[in-house]
Length: 306
Image (cartoon, rainbow, N blue to C red; front, side, top):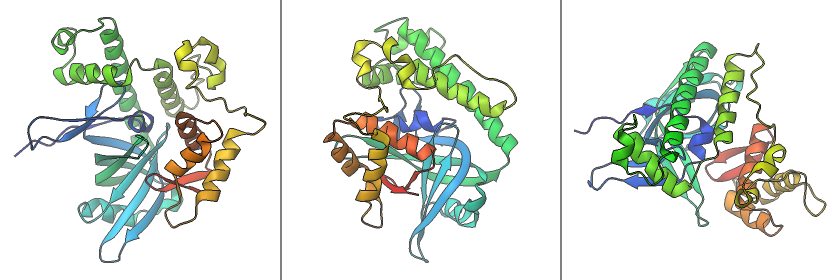
């Protein structure tokens, strides 16, 4: 019998930005998702506010979808007949008070026709927690993220180094292997993004302190500092051809919401592309709208205006 995989603490932003999957040669080996910082995992321990839940399926076989929000973004949960304990826990939670919850879950992904990967969680256990416990989770997740940032920094100091060499630099085999795979797939990670995650976490943990890492408040503040090849991928929300991109995307969400599932991300990206907005910009704008409470994701890959 295979040992259960470790449930790693990871922020929503790092998890949702992951698209690299791999499976061992053994037929019974589990599939793993690797983040841009090289964390290789198939189970996670996440925490945040449960802000929404919906019941699908039937009364005899309910399927519960839920959204859990941490300081960086959203986790999307789905629990059905194969997760009875978690499904029952979600059913009993009053989402209107937005309680803090801790979730142990397996990772599931799906990729649309355009190659965009979405991450969903199949919870094994959902537990209501207090704010102090959530802050403790934030601190532990921040420590883990900081370690990954430093390990990637070490790996970048030894370009083309094999896994065996990185293991001599203080990394476990899993860490070294994950980082090598991540750098090959994602290229060099933008550390500013992850420092922003840490800043958000510590601002929540220490609300009475002025936590400021000296990071720009928007991408426009550091656009000119980026390498030329990266500038095109940074969204400019100030507008294009006389229109506000965020308002345009919000309008698309409302216009394309013509069924019970919501507006398809694929359709939103296709329509936005006609106006010169890249899929990366669409993803950023949708995240902004969700963080502002203007839209939500009732089903994986579908958006709806609040």
